[in-house]
Length: 365
Image 1 (cartoon, rainbow, N blue to C red):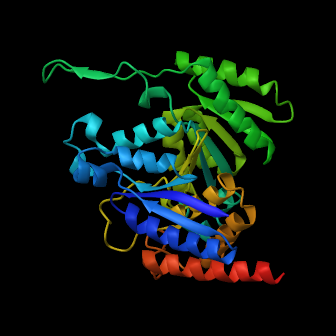
Image 2: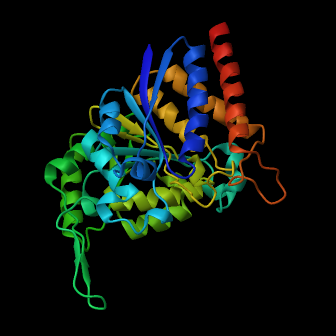
Image 3: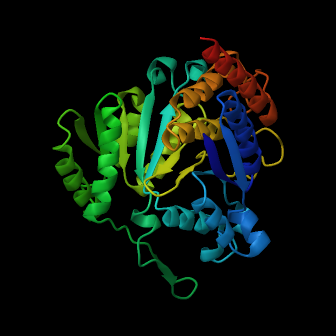
């Protein structure tokens, strides 16, 4: 198979983790007899500095011409003074909207070797394996009107949370379908005791749930869910929620399983899917060679699974990551006090070697 992808390294640590993930992807593609074609384009701050646009036309065209898009990260404090429409995050939101990727899938899995990395007790966090399904194109991040007006000292700012029934229904069906492939348990998270948007959300999800009688549906307020997520994370299987709540809760889940550097994501539902780690650009450590590339690597595994239906190849990447962690290798974000840490490139190299071994074993069998 020809794997035609567009890579958008972006800003901060984005280029570092993206290159390591592509190294792993190249290894797996070669081992399984596929041809990998990678087109690299600018996005975010890098594109803004090069072309005065955080999402240049040629970048978007390259994305639509590929089978999948790989994103590193965008943004950083050096861009805070730019107008809102030119900031790197604006380019990312436009990219999601243009691609039509309304369903963001964020697995949060505790690798057994990382039990000591969680701030929670091992007996609390053990067995955590959840999938957060986040609606990606609605809510406060896209709702209109949005503005800031008035004179300094008396300004007001307005953002609008907005959802339609069709938007809620389509993301709900994605979550229910995924729940059927797992433990058949879905928790829908909202704030229906306060927000009209959430009351509509709960009503529509309940209605759609009637079509999935084999999936156990429960509802939770977002504040209560955040508490349970910290107290009993292994209770969750599939979490369904709107854009902002999903953004916040998935970062919390990253802390629970040891590091944001372990959380991959897939944004699907459009003509071309987008794959990215959720950890952000981390400009404070950019260029130091200490960023964790595993979230980017695991994002590429999701790409193999969802965009190309290459299940064995995806499993090869995931097993390689697990093997490297089982062998005690840690980047700085995962290292405990007194534990030696390795560089970004060293972690990438170790996963490449483990992936080669895993692929060879499969071929031999």
